[in-house]
Length: 510
Image (cartoon, rainbow, N blue to C red; front, side):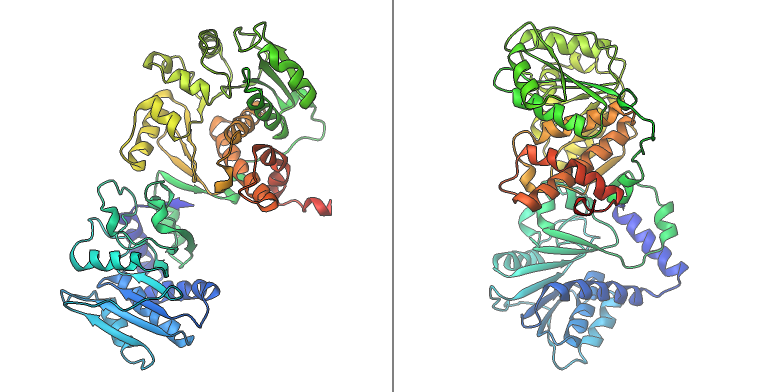
């Protein structure tokens, strides 16, 4: 799914009006109907609904929604902020319609306003401002938002929480942004929903299809995408009938040090579980017996050093390499990383301590081979390129790094961002907070390495790997709960995740 900026959204809406054709007030009605359909599935008819409408088209949506909910017998109290006596044309039309409904309490705010008393069990619908906002709210609008946020009521926002810019919020005033419980957004997710410092304002969010012109959407270029099931299913390869393990690739996992052999096991196990034909783990000597006991399907190269990796093996026979989980930053291990990067002729995934070593100096970045995949979390990324003042700035730095290295940067988070050297970003749609657990990143490294070993391109491996990792986490959380989720549960759910993407029967039916 594409993600657009405000000018692109406006262009798509205009094209829809011209091409369909449809007048803007009817398009507003269509959007409002979709909002009400989703809202009524969640909110009881016995709850009091307080609707706050602004003077623009988002306010027009709010007034239309008030009318439609009143027709469903919801008790509605509607407040229109019109302090400058300047409503948009469509807002005026919906104002006249709402005035003809006796059951709706309607109040137009033109000067001083004493807000109503709102109880915990009440519902607020926020329609003050929408996606077109480009400066922080001030005055009475800011005061109203602060009041709305101070209540204990659940807040549902129309399209965008009032006060939120749809992309970069680094210059916004956070205290004057509505903190929604849920946002019903029209046609596309907004970039701000996917970033750590602005996403929480949208709460849970749901995209509503309002029938914008599909041809214009296809033609409209963007650098931002939201990765969904159909995007990933189209990338999966099908194994040939006469395939054997050597066809499926041989991955090398360089991981582990004393006390962190678990990282090596998780990474190696997930690499084989995703379909690599052969996996060899390069471990310090202290990990050999552990690996061969816990995971006999893997082969092992045991280092002569007992506690850390100190020697570089012949890497010419491997089809992909994953390096970093739990390796530490011993000087000898740093030398191994340097040698592998200098000699490597196959795709490589760099994670965890490999990234921490690389962050020690810019000279390290110069030896990273093109078409590598880096998988930092926010802390590791900031150590690599320096701290950022906002999530949006960090995203731009990730694009810059991907372009400089001619590689893929997988910036891990709630909506993991896959950043390409062509300056495109694919945000992942799967995953849950339970995956914020030790070893989860090691599992992702193994998954992506296993896909590379099977001859997926770096970008395809990153897309598939991130999506499956999150989907497996969702499956595991459903079984165990988010609180009880551990990294091994994610590995155990990889197969079901693959079946789900391929739309195969449930395992209980096999």
